[in-house]
Image (cartoon, rainbow over all chains, first blue to last red; front, side, top):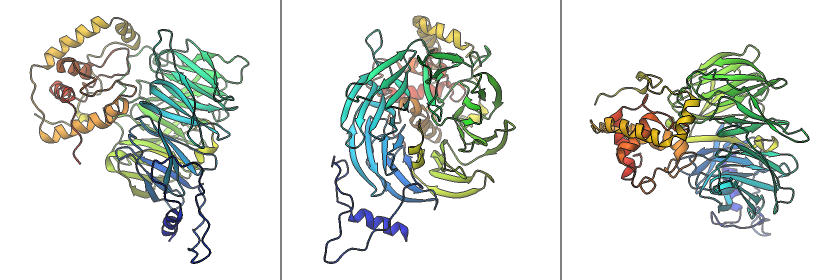
Length: 409
Length: 137
């Protein structure tokens, strides 16, 4: 079967010890003249992906056409808040671990090619459009670090320094065109744009006073708008990056209408821009609502009551549906919003402790991680029928290689 | 102790009256917040009944997994500070229990009183202070 063929491919690869920083060695050695081994099955990567096993520090590698696991890679450290970006050839996964580990995994040979402990506490990363630079965003020490995507050589270290000399935690990192990266400073009410066209000497532009406690951010699919959610006040900060002099402006100010906020047991995530037509769908903070904003006027046009504090609000790639998952204690449910009618049309109970969702590249299926059931559930997004159920230890983030072709992912 | 499903608890802590603006103001007045928290903590300390084993296992999982989304599964910190024994040295369990119960105004630390009884918060605080147990698998 294909699985066996893939395993034989990895067996024929050079046997590098996991974690060994081997540089650009040939992966498939040419068969020797005598006793040529069977040719490995060729395998594309467009329907592959990874599921983070947060407790085991491992990745389950998956195939979204077959809806099955195809392998596993261990030894990635503390993955309790891991995120992943992909090389533009969709072969290598860059895994950013909670413990500051940055690991480059070859998903074809199912091996670690490079691994660096780059910080004490990290929250995620991004990759440049040309695929040459990988950037990590760190809480401790607060700042970003720029790496060569091929070797993980550190090219520059940019502290998120504040006026008092302390360093801010960095959130909401996203890639922009021209080897630029944008991020927000949780502790400093600021948004920074790092121009890494000279990656050893990045130049940083800082927008001050953007609002209290930005907790995460997203960039629109065209790279024009950057939106940072604010924990410390009702509203979001938006930057039009196509302006000559980009500035932050407040949008949806006072969406809480002065009402007492509900406890937020888990911070929402904004990566995974939920854009459907001209509307963006955003999680409210401290309210069990999804906010709908018109991306032309940046005015609120609707708010949709949902089953709990939204964590991920994600549009199916065609924009017809928006799927929402929730914070504890409502995280056994997932709701589906129909965007033309802006109504919740379905409530699913995929399992215990839903942490993440990922659409297949064209959106016909969605994969949902259920941490406490040790399962990943795959649903048909049109019929909402369960298509597959995979056993994965404490799954959290699910990342498919098609992210490689999207800005801000 | 009587075990309850978390859904049987009220969805919102009625004591958590401060709106977000007031919460920020509280943060600027940290000594006041600390005094209130300590006073509340003293109230919690009156009935330190240890939870039944099944509930204790639930609480350990909750701390590792759900508190872990901000504090790290290994409690080494994230958006929230580290909760290791070393990091919490010198902080009385009653204080920690009050923080768990009431949250910290002006920060992302929410009040957990809708999901935890006071005695459970104190038990968690005591476990944190001595080095939090691992989940049993």
